[in-house]
Length: 483
Ligand SMILES: [Zn+2]
Image 1: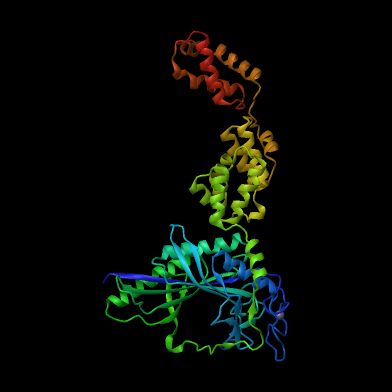
Image 2: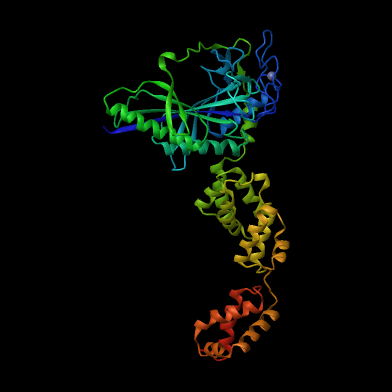
Protein backbone atom coordinates (compact mmCIF):
# COMPACT_ATOMS: atom_id res chain seq x y z
CA UNK A 1 0.00 0.00 0.00
CA UNK A 2 1.39 3.39 -0.99
CA UNK A 3 0.53 5.68 1.92
CA UNK A 4 0.79 9.43 2.23
CA UNK A 5 1.15 11.28 5.56
CA UNK A 6 -1.24 14.16 6.25
CA UNK A 7 0.00 16.55 8.94
CA UNK A 8 -1.48 19.64 10.55
CA UNK A 9 -0.18 21.66 13.47
CA UNK A 10 -1.66 23.38 16.52
CA UNK A 11 0.68 25.85 18.15
CA UNK A 12 0.24 27.73 21.41
CA UNK A 13 2.19 30.96 21.61
CA UNK A 14 2.50 32.86 24.89
CA UNK A 15 2.18 36.54 24.00
CA UNK A 16 4.75 39.05 25.24
CA UNK A 17 2.85 41.38 27.61
CA UNK A 18 3.52 42.94 31.01
CA UNK A 19 0.45 41.45 32.65
CA UNK A 20 -1.88 38.48 32.22
CA UNK A 21 -4.82 38.46 29.83
CA UNK A 22 -7.69 39.05 32.29
CA UNK A 23 -6.03 40.48 35.43
CA UNK A 24 -3.09 42.64 36.49
CA UNK A 25 -0.80 39.82 37.67
CA UNK A 26 2.64 39.88 36.01
CA UNK A 27 3.09 37.73 32.91
CA UNK A 28 6.53 36.27 33.60
CA UNK A 29 8.02 32.80 33.58
CA UNK A 30 8.82 31.01 36.83
CA UNK A 31 8.84 32.79 40.18
CA UNK A 32 8.01 31.36 43.59
CA UNK A 33 5.05 28.99 42.99
CA UNK A 34 1.68 30.73 43.47
CA UNK A 35 3.24 34.15 43.95
CA UNK A 36 1.80 35.70 40.75
CA UNK A 37 -1.86 35.03 41.32
CA UNK A 38 -5.02 36.90 42.32
CA UNK A 39 -8.71 36.25 42.85
CA UNK A 40 -9.40 36.80 39.12
CA UNK A 41 -6.89 34.33 37.67
CA UNK A 42 -7.89 31.81 40.35
CA UNK A 43 -11.53 32.25 39.32
CA UNK A 44 -12.91 33.16 42.75
CA UNK A 45 -16.67 33.62 42.79
CA UNK A 46 -17.70 37.23 42.27
CA UNK A 47 -14.64 38.24 40.28
CA UNK A 48 -14.81 39.37 36.67
CA UNK A 49 -12.20 39.19 33.91
CA UNK A 50 -11.04 42.42 32.25
CA UNK A 51 -9.44 41.97 28.84
CA UNK A 52 -5.81 43.17 28.52
CA UNK A 53 -5.59 45.50 25.51
CA UNK A 54 -1.87 44.75 25.03
CA UNK A 55 -2.59 41.02 24.66
CA UNK A 56 -5.12 41.75 21.93
CA UNK A 57 -2.64 44.04 20.16
CA UNK A 58 0.08 41.36 20.20
CA UNK A 59 -2.35 38.73 18.92
CA UNK A 60 -3.49 41.05 16.12
CA UNK A 61 0.12 41.87 15.20
CA UNK A 62 1.08 38.19 15.03
CA UNK A 63 -2.05 37.41 12.99
CA UNK A 64 -1.33 40.28 10.60
CA UNK A 65 2.26 39.17 10.19
CA UNK A 66 0.85 35.86 8.90
CA UNK A 67 -1.44 37.77 6.51
CA UNK A 68 -4.52 36.50 8.33
CA UNK A 69 -7.90 38.22 8.09
CA UNK A 70 -8.77 39.86 11.40
CA UNK A 71 -12.37 39.43 12.51
CA UNK A 72 -13.14 42.91 13.79
CA UNK A 73 -15.79 41.32 15.97
CA UNK A 74 -14.79 38.13 17.73
CA UNK A 75 -16.33 36.34 20.70
CA UNK A 76 -14.86 34.72 23.79
CA UNK A 77 -16.19 31.31 24.75
CA UNK A 78 -16.01 29.07 27.80
CA UNK A 79 -14.28 25.76 27.27
CA UNK A 80 -15.44 23.61 30.16
CA UNK A 81 -13.32 20.84 31.61
CA UNK A 82 -12.01 19.76 34.97
CA UNK A 83 -8.31 19.52 35.64
CA UNK A 84 -6.41 20.38 38.83
CA UNK A 85 -4.35 23.09 37.09
CA UNK A 86 -7.54 24.91 36.00
CA UNK A 87 -9.07 26.41 39.15
CA UNK A 88 -12.08 27.98 37.38
CA UNK A 89 -13.21 24.66 35.90
CA UNK A 90 -13.20 26.30 32.48
CA UNK A 91 -10.80 28.10 30.19
CA UNK A 92 -11.71 31.37 28.49
CA UNK A 93 -11.00 30.80 24.80
CA UNK A 94 -12.58 31.59 21.45
CA UNK A 95 -14.61 29.11 19.42
CA UNK A 96 -17.13 30.04 16.71
CA UNK A 97 -15.76 33.49 16.07
CA UNK A 98 -11.98 33.54 16.50
CA UNK A 99 -9.82 36.66 16.38
CA UNK A 100 -8.40 35.85 12.95
CA UNK A 101 -8.72 33.35 10.11
CA UNK A 102 -7.00 32.28 6.91
CA UNK A 103 -3.37 33.23 7.19
CA UNK A 104 -0.34 32.12 5.22
CA UNK A 105 3.06 30.95 6.37
CA UNK A 106 5.74 30.95 3.65
CA UNK A 107 7.96 27.85 3.90
CA UNK A 108 11.64 27.48 3.06
CA UNK A 109 11.01 25.46 -0.13
CA UNK A 110 8.93 28.29 -1.61
CA UNK A 111 5.56 26.70 -0.83
CA UNK A 112 3.16 28.12 1.75
CA UNK A 113 1.17 26.62 4.62
CA UNK A 114 -2.41 27.82 5.08
CA UNK A 115 -3.41 28.81 8.58
CA UNK A 116 -7.01 28.00 9.40
CA UNK A 117 -7.54 30.13 12.49
CA UNK A 118 -5.85 32.11 15.24
CA UNK A 119 -7.65 32.62 18.54
CA UNK A 120 -6.97 34.21 21.90
CA UNK A 121 -7.17 32.24 25.13
CA UNK A 122 -5.74 31.99 28.62
CA UNK A 123 -3.09 29.52 29.75
CA UNK A 124 -3.67 27.05 32.59
CA UNK A 125 -1.49 26.44 35.66
CA UNK A 126 1.06 23.71 36.06
CA UNK A 127 1.14 20.52 38.10
CA UNK A 128 4.46 19.77 39.76
CA UNK A 129 5.32 16.10 40.09
CA UNK A 130 8.72 16.79 41.57
CA UNK A 131 10.00 19.39 44.00
CA UNK A 132 11.09 22.65 42.40
CA UNK A 133 14.85 22.25 42.01
CA UNK A 134 14.64 18.44 41.96
CA UNK A 135 13.76 15.72 44.41
CA UNK A 136 10.64 13.60 44.45
CA UNK A 137 7.44 14.63 46.14
CA UNK A 138 6.32 12.10 48.74
CA UNK A 139 3.55 10.42 46.76
CA UNK A 140 1.66 13.55 45.77
CA UNK A 141 1.61 16.39 43.25
CA UNK A 142 1.57 20.13 43.83
CA UNK A 143 -0.01 22.83 41.72
CA UNK A 144 1.48 26.18 40.68
CA UNK A 145 -1.11 28.66 39.39
CA UNK A 146 1.40 31.33 38.28
CA UNK A 147 0.78 30.45 34.61
CA UNK A 148 -3.03 30.72 34.92
CA UNK A 149 -4.18 33.58 32.72
CA UNK A 150 -1.00 34.03 30.70
CA UNK A 151 -2.20 35.24 27.28
CA UNK A 152 -2.02 32.66 24.49
CA UNK A 153 -2.60 32.78 20.78
CA UNK A 154 -3.52 29.36 19.43
CA UNK A 155 -2.61 28.90 15.79
CA UNK A 156 -4.23 26.03 13.87
CA UNK A 157 -2.96 25.11 10.41
CA UNK A 158 -4.59 23.23 7.56
CA UNK A 159 -3.51 19.56 7.26
CA UNK A 160 -1.37 20.47 4.25
CA UNK A 161 2.02 19.16 5.38
CA UNK A 162 3.24 15.88 3.92
CA UNK A 163 6.49 15.16 5.78
CA UNK A 164 8.10 15.45 9.20
CA UNK A 165 10.75 17.73 7.69
CA UNK A 166 8.23 20.20 6.30
CA UNK A 167 6.38 20.23 9.65
CA UNK A 168 9.63 21.09 11.40
CA UNK A 169 10.36 23.78 8.83
CA UNK A 170 6.87 25.28 9.29
CA UNK A 171 7.38 25.50 13.05
CA UNK A 172 10.79 27.06 12.67
CA UNK A 173 9.40 29.64 10.24
CA UNK A 174 6.51 30.40 12.57
CA UNK A 175 8.92 30.78 15.46
CA UNK A 176 11.02 33.12 13.33
CA UNK A 177 7.97 35.31 12.63
CA UNK A 178 7.04 35.79 16.26
CA UNK A 179 10.64 36.56 17.21
CA UNK A 180 11.02 39.11 14.38
CA UNK A 181 7.74 40.78 15.29
CA UNK A 182 8.44 40.70 19.04
CA UNK A 183 5.02 39.18 19.73
CA UNK A 184 6.45 36.40 21.93
CA UNK A 185 9.82 35.46 23.38
CA UNK A 186 9.25 32.03 21.77
CA UNK A 187 11.21 30.31 24.54
CA UNK A 188 10.49 26.61 24.04
CA UNK A 189 12.15 25.43 27.25
CA UNK A 190 9.91 27.78 29.21
CA UNK A 191 6.80 26.74 27.26
CA UNK A 192 6.25 30.03 25.42
CA UNK A 193 5.96 28.10 22.14
CA UNK A 194 4.26 24.70 22.34
CA UNK A 195 3.20 22.43 19.55
CA UNK A 196 0.76 19.57 18.98
CA UNK A 197 0.86 17.67 15.69
CA UNK A 198 -2.08 15.91 14.00
CA UNK A 199 -0.88 12.98 11.94
CA UNK A 200 -2.84 10.59 9.72
CA UNK A 201 -2.15 8.42 6.69
CA UNK A 202 -4.16 7.80 3.55
CA UNK A 203 -3.55 5.86 0.35
CA UNK A 204 -1.92 8.11 -2.25
CA UNK A 205 -4.61 9.52 -4.53
CA UNK A 206 -7.44 9.23 -2.02
CA UNK A 207 -9.00 12.52 -0.97
CA UNK A 208 -10.65 11.54 2.31
CA UNK A 209 -8.46 11.78 5.39
CA UNK A 210 -7.60 8.77 7.53
CA UNK A 211 -8.17 8.56 11.30
CA UNK A 212 -5.89 11.11 12.91
CA UNK A 213 -3.71 10.93 15.96
CA UNK A 214 -2.88 14.03 17.94
CA UNK A 215 0.60 14.09 19.49
CA UNK A 216 0.68 16.49 22.43
CA UNK A 217 3.14 18.96 23.92
CA UNK A 218 6.20 18.68 21.74
CA UNK A 219 8.89 20.84 23.25
CA UNK A 220 11.53 21.12 20.53
CA UNK A 221 11.65 21.36 16.74
CA UNK A 222 13.59 18.14 16.62
CA UNK A 223 11.08 16.28 18.76
CA UNK A 224 8.24 17.42 16.51
CA UNK A 225 10.00 15.80 13.55
CA UNK A 226 10.90 12.69 15.57
CA UNK A 227 7.36 12.19 16.87
CA UNK A 228 5.86 12.57 13.38
CA UNK A 229 8.36 10.11 11.90
CA UNK A 230 7.47 7.65 14.62
CA UNK A 231 3.72 8.10 14.03
CA UNK A 232 4.12 7.60 10.27
CA UNK A 233 6.02 4.39 10.92
CA UNK A 234 3.60 3.15 13.60
CA UNK A 235 0.45 3.92 11.60
CA UNK A 236 1.95 2.34 8.47
CA UNK A 237 2.51 -0.91 10.39
CA UNK A 238 -1.04 -0.80 11.77
CA UNK A 239 -2.59 -0.24 8.33
CA UNK A 240 -0.37 -2.75 6.55
CA UNK A 241 -1.33 -5.44 9.05
CA UNK A 242 -4.97 -4.86 8.06
CA UNK A 243 -5.99 -3.06 11.25
CA UNK A 244 -7.43 0.42 11.69
CA UNK A 245 -5.70 3.41 13.23
CA UNK A 246 -7.50 4.47 16.39
CA UNK A 247 -8.34 8.15 16.67
CA UNK A 248 -6.65 9.20 19.88
CA UNK A 249 -4.35 11.59 21.66
CA UNK A 250 -0.80 10.40 22.23
CA UNK A 251 2.21 11.71 24.10
CA UNK A 252 5.78 11.65 22.85
CA UNK A 253 8.58 10.13 24.91
CA UNK A 254 11.76 11.95 23.90
CA UNK A 255 13.98 9.41 25.67
CA UNK A 256 13.12 6.60 23.24
CA UNK A 257 11.48 8.49 20.35
CA UNK A 258 8.10 6.75 20.61
CA UNK A 259 4.51 7.82 21.30
CA UNK A 260 2.06 6.30 23.78
CA UNK A 261 -1.71 6.56 24.06
CA UNK A 262 -3.05 9.23 26.45
CA UNK A 263 -6.75 8.98 25.71
CA UNK A 264 -8.98 7.63 22.95
CA UNK A 265 -11.81 9.40 21.14
CA UNK A 266 -14.33 7.89 23.57
CA UNK A 267 -12.53 9.52 26.47
CA UNK A 268 -12.19 12.85 24.66
CA UNK A 269 -13.53 15.90 26.47
CA UNK A 270 -16.86 17.37 25.51
CA UNK A 271 -16.04 20.97 26.25
CA UNK A 272 -19.63 22.31 26.09
CA UNK A 273 -18.47 25.61 24.63
CA UNK A 274 -20.78 28.55 25.16
CA UNK A 275 -20.26 32.32 24.79
CA UNK A 276 -18.40 33.74 27.78
CA UNK A 277 -21.07 35.66 29.74
CA UNK A 278 -18.53 37.81 31.62
CA UNK A 279 -16.92 39.37 28.53
CA UNK A 280 -18.51 41.44 25.75
CA UNK A 281 -17.59 40.63 22.13
CA UNK A 282 -14.11 41.85 21.23
CA UNK A 283 -14.38 44.75 18.79
CA UNK A 284 -11.38 46.08 16.88
CA UNK A 285 -12.08 49.27 14.95
CA UNK A 286 -10.50 50.31 11.66
CA UNK A 287 -8.22 52.92 13.22
CA UNK A 288 -6.71 50.45 15.68
CA UNK A 289 -6.27 47.81 13.01
CA UNK A 290 -4.60 50.28 10.67
CA UNK A 291 -2.24 51.60 13.31
CA UNK A 292 -1.19 48.06 14.29
CA UNK A 293 -0.71 47.08 10.65
CA UNK A 294 1.25 50.26 9.96
CA UNK A 295 3.66 49.66 12.83
CA UNK A 296 4.29 45.99 12.08
CA UNK A 297 8.02 45.17 12.17
CA UNK A 298 9.68 43.63 9.16
CA UNK A 299 8.95 39.93 8.77
CA UNK A 300 11.90 37.56 8.30
CA UNK A 301 11.36 37.01 4.57
CA UNK A 302 10.99 40.75 3.95
CA UNK A 303 14.15 41.38 5.91
CA UNK A 304 16.05 38.77 3.87
CA UNK A 305 14.91 40.51 0.67
CA UNK A 306 16.06 43.87 2.00
CA UNK A 307 19.47 42.55 3.08
CA UNK A 308 19.90 41.22 -0.43
CA UNK A 309 19.03 44.43 -2.21
CA UNK A 310 20.59 46.83 0.29
CA UNK A 311 23.91 45.06 0.89
CA UNK A 312 24.28 42.86 -2.17
CA UNK A 313 24.12 39.61 -0.20
CA UNK A 314 23.35 36.35 -2.00
CA UNK A 315 19.98 34.77 -1.35
CA UNK A 316 21.59 32.01 0.72
CA UNK A 317 23.52 34.49 2.86
CA UNK A 318 20.45 36.68 3.39
CA UNK A 319 18.54 33.56 4.45
CA UNK A 320 21.34 32.53 6.81
CA UNK A 321 21.60 35.97 8.40
CA UNK A 322 17.84 36.15 9.00
CA UNK A 323 17.58 32.74 10.67
CA UNK A 324 17.18 34.67 13.91
CA UNK A 325 16.27 38.25 14.64
CA UNK A 326 19.38 38.54 16.84
CA UNK A 327 21.66 37.55 13.97
CA UNK A 328 19.97 39.95 11.55
CA UNK A 329 20.31 42.79 14.09
CA UNK A 330 23.94 41.84 14.71
CA UNK A 331 24.76 41.99 11.01
CA UNK A 332 23.07 45.34 10.50
CA UNK A 333 24.64 46.87 13.62
CA UNK A 334 28.13 45.76 12.55
CA UNK A 335 27.50 47.09 9.05
CA UNK A 336 26.67 50.52 10.48
CA UNK A 337 30.20 50.59 11.95
CA UNK A 338 31.86 49.50 8.67
CA UNK A 339 29.49 50.53 5.88
CA UNK A 340 32.17 50.06 3.20
CA UNK A 341 32.40 46.29 3.66
CA UNK A 342 29.06 44.59 4.42
CA UNK A 343 30.09 41.45 2.54
CA UNK A 344 33.22 41.11 4.67
CA UNK A 345 31.10 41.34 7.79
CA UNK A 346 28.60 38.83 6.41
CA UNK A 347 31.47 36.42 5.75
CA UNK A 348 32.78 36.74 9.27
CA UNK A 349 29.35 36.16 10.76
CA UNK A 350 28.75 33.17 8.48
CA UNK A 351 31.99 31.48 9.44
CA UNK A 352 33.53 32.55 12.76
CA UNK A 353 30.45 33.89 14.59
CA UNK A 354 28.13 31.04 13.56
CA UNK A 355 30.79 28.50 14.50
CA UNK A 356 30.85 29.96 18.03
CA UNK A 357 27.05 30.06 18.17
CA UNK A 358 26.79 26.37 17.30
CA UNK A 359 28.66 25.39 20.45
CA UNK A 360 26.43 23.92 23.17
CA UNK A 361 27.61 26.57 25.65
CA UNK A 362 27.07 29.47 23.22
CA UNK A 363 26.22 32.71 25.05
CA UNK A 364 22.82 34.44 24.69
CA UNK A 365 22.71 37.31 22.19
CA UNK A 366 23.20 39.89 24.94
CA UNK A 367 26.67 38.43 25.59
CA UNK A 368 27.87 38.18 22.01
CA UNK A 369 30.96 40.17 21.07
CA UNK A 370 29.76 43.74 20.39
CA UNK A 371 29.02 44.18 16.66
CA UNK A 372 31.24 47.29 16.66
CA UNK A 373 34.19 45.13 17.75
CA UNK A 374 33.58 42.61 14.98
CA UNK A 375 33.40 45.51 12.52
CA UNK A 376 36.66 46.87 13.98
CA UNK A 377 38.35 43.53 13.39
CA UNK A 378 37.15 43.29 9.78
CA UNK A 379 38.26 46.90 9.24
CA UNK A 380 41.78 46.02 10.41
CA UNK A 381 42.04 43.31 7.77
CA UNK A 382 40.71 45.76 5.18
CA UNK A 383 43.35 48.40 5.98
CA UNK A 384 46.14 45.84 6.09
CA UNK A 385 47.02 46.22 9.76
CA UNK A 386 46.04 42.61 10.49
CA UNK A 387 46.32 39.48 8.35
CA UNK A 388 43.34 37.21 7.77
CA UNK A 389 44.88 34.42 9.84
CA UNK A 390 45.91 36.90 12.55
CA UNK A 391 42.34 38.18 12.64
CA UNK A 392 41.04 34.66 13.29
CA UNK A 393 43.43 34.37 16.21
CA UNK A 394 42.31 37.72 17.57
CA UNK A 395 38.64 36.76 17.12
CA UNK A 396 39.12 33.54 19.09
CA UNK A 397 40.69 35.62 21.88
CA UNK A 398 38.08 38.38 22.06
CA UNK A 399 34.81 36.48 21.41
CA UNK A 400 34.50 35.62 25.09
CA UNK A 401 36.68 38.29 26.72
CA UNK A 402 35.10 41.15 24.70
CA UNK A 403 38.55 42.77 24.54
CA UNK A 404 39.03 45.59 22.05
CA UNK A 405 40.36 44.03 18.79
CA UNK A 406 43.13 46.65 18.43
CA UNK A 407 44.35 46.05 21.95
CA UNK A 408 44.21 42.26 21.57
CA UNK A 409 46.15 42.48 18.30
CA UNK A 410 48.89 44.45 20.02
CA UNK A 411 48.93 42.21 23.08
CA UNK A 412 49.27 39.11 20.90
CA UNK A 413 51.96 40.77 18.74
CA UNK A 414 49.89 40.20 15.60
CA UNK A 415 49.91 43.75 14.29
CA UNK A 416 50.96 43.78 10.65
CA UNK A 417 53.64 46.34 9.77
CA UNK A 418 52.49 48.68 7.04
CA UNK A 419 55.59 50.85 7.02
CA UNK A 420 56.99 50.16 3.54
CA UNK A 421 60.43 51.48 4.53
CA UNK A 422 60.67 48.91 7.29
CA UNK A 423 59.33 46.13 5.07
CA UNK A 424 61.82 47.00 2.32
CA UNK A 425 64.68 46.96 4.85
CA UNK A 426 63.74 43.43 6.01
CA UNK A 427 63.41 42.31 2.40
CA UNK A 428 66.85 43.60 1.44
CA UNK A 429 68.33 42.05 4.58
CA UNK A 430 66.84 38.68 3.62
CA UNK A 431 68.15 38.94 0.05
CA UNK A 432 71.67 39.72 1.27
CA UNK A 433 71.66 36.90 3.77
CA UNK A 434 70.55 34.36 1.17
CA UNK A 435 72.80 34.83 -1.86
CA UNK A 436 72.01 31.47 -3.54
CA UNK A 437 68.20 31.78 -3.54
CA UNK A 438 68.50 35.45 -4.52
CA UNK A 439 70.47 34.48 -7.63
CA UNK A 440 67.92 31.79 -8.42
CA UNK A 441 65.16 34.38 -8.11
CA UNK A 442 67.01 36.70 -10.50
CA UNK A 443 67.32 33.75 -12.91
CA UNK A 444 63.50 33.53 -12.90
CA UNK A 445 63.16 30.48 -10.64
CA UNK A 446 59.92 31.39 -8.89
CA UNK A 447 59.97 28.35 -6.64
CA UNK A 448 62.38 30.15 -4.29
CA UNK A 449 59.88 32.97 -3.70
CA UNK A 450 58.12 31.11 -0.91
CA UNK A 451 61.46 30.49 0.82
CA UNK A 452 62.43 34.16 0.63
CA UNK A 453 59.00 35.29 1.84
CA UNK A 454 59.53 32.95 4.80
CA UNK A 455 62.90 34.57 5.55
CA UNK A 456 61.35 38.07 5.54
CA UNK A 457 58.52 36.87 7.77
CA UNK A 458 61.13 35.50 10.17
CA UNK A 459 62.99 38.82 10.25
CA UNK A 460 59.73 40.70 10.84
CA UNK A 461 58.75 38.21 13.54
CA UNK A 462 55.53 37.55 11.65
CA UNK A 463 54.40 41.16 11.41
CA UNK A 464 54.92 41.58 7.66
CA UNK A 465 52.10 40.99 5.19
CA UNK A 466 53.26 37.90 3.22
CA UNK A 467 51.19 38.90 0.17
CA UNK A 468 52.90 42.30 0.01
CA UNK A 469 56.36 40.71 0.42
CA UNK A 470 55.69 38.21 -2.35
CA UNK A 471 54.57 40.86 -4.80
CA UNK A 472 57.48 43.14 -3.89
CA UNK A 473 60.01 40.27 -4.37
CA UNK A 474 58.71 39.57 -7.87
CA UNK A 475 58.71 43.26 -8.69
CA UNK A 476 62.29 43.63 -7.38
CA UNK A 477 63.51 40.60 -9.37
CA UNK A 478 62.01 41.97 -12.61
CA UNK A 479 63.52 45.40 -11.95
CA UNK A 480 66.89 43.67 -11.54
CA UNK A 481 66.78 41.77 -14.79
CA UNK A 482 64.83 38.60 -13.99
CA UNK A 483 62.89 37.25 -16.98
ZN1 LIG B 1 -4.27 37.40 38.52
